[in-house]
Length: 59
Image (spheres, rainbow, N blue to C red):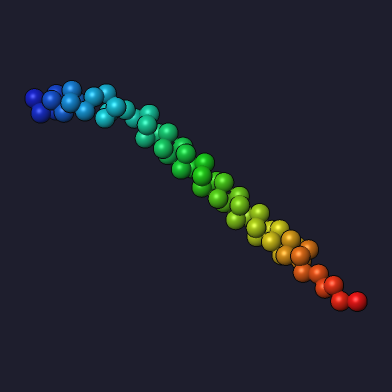
């Protein structure tokens, strides 16, 4: 019991702050959704955009 009290006082209130962990999870989910959207967009539009730049300029 005394060790837990000493650790709680020494580490301060941020050691037991659950909000920081929740924020990290939210940011990780947001980043993964953005990455999934980028992968989806490249998969859908990738070939059509590549075809725009694949132009022959031969007369």
